[in-house]
Amino acid sequence: MIIQCRCLTKRYPADQGMVAAVNNVNLVVAQGEFVIILGHSGSGKTTLLSLIGGLTEPDSGEVLVNGVDNWHQSDEALSDMRNRTIGFVFQFASLIPTLTSLENVLLPLSFGRVPRGSHEQAREILARVGLGDKMHAYPGQLSGGQQRRIAIARAFINQPAIILADEPTGDLDEETENDILRIFRDYNEHGTTFVVVTHNVHLARTQKNPRVLEMRQGTLLEQDGRFA
Ligand code: ADP
Ligand code: MG
Image (cartoon, rainbow, N blue to C red; front, side, top):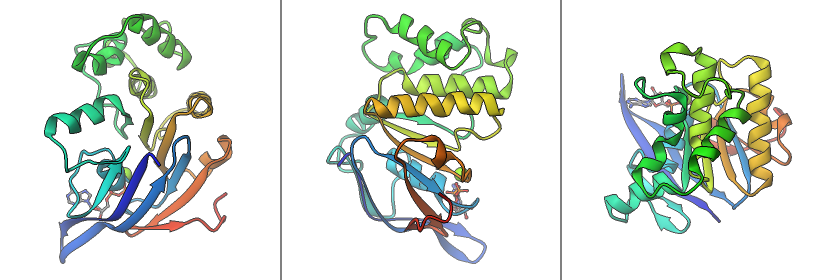
């Protein structure tokens, strides 16, 4: 198994005391799985992804990635895991405005050794997301959907074993959405593990053999097929 969450809980202060954004979640994801977590706004999806990716520390419980507890290792080992093992597709693009598309895609590599052929790979990924002619454009010169595609290309540059994606198709036009989902499927067929959180109930149809779960008020439920 590549991801293991055990009794994972994260609480936040709310109007009336503390609210568990993620409440006692257990989840095992095997290598190569495509996991889709559906849930309404506020159900805890983003918090769960952030816990899995080691960006947020749980109040209790643990997350193991490749058998290593996120919070029982050095800071250096944790950031190394985040940089090399995981590709993040955030809900908001979070691109660096002073870097071109190509430079933004190459950014994750600047934290370590830059492998040979990275530039070609970055160009190839940008072409695959339909931005072959925007390599040298700056984020401010691009539409929201184009910026989102750069963020997706950036997530793949390190050839991560795991992609964590938060509403990856939100505010994309249908054609781009289909392109992105085809790219996800292609990577998944080549062994990349995905955990995608979304309220898009149609996303499951676009993937080969997805496992669909549902989040409700911080609790993760096995899906009963209503959304499939
Ligand atoms: P989703 O992604 O499904 O919309 P979130 O994980 O963003 O849900 O949020 C789940 C709950 O936790 C919500 O009630 C939200 O208000 C609360 N929450 C999330 N992040 C924070 C935070 N940083 N501070 C306070 N409350 C938060
Ligand atoms: Mg969210």
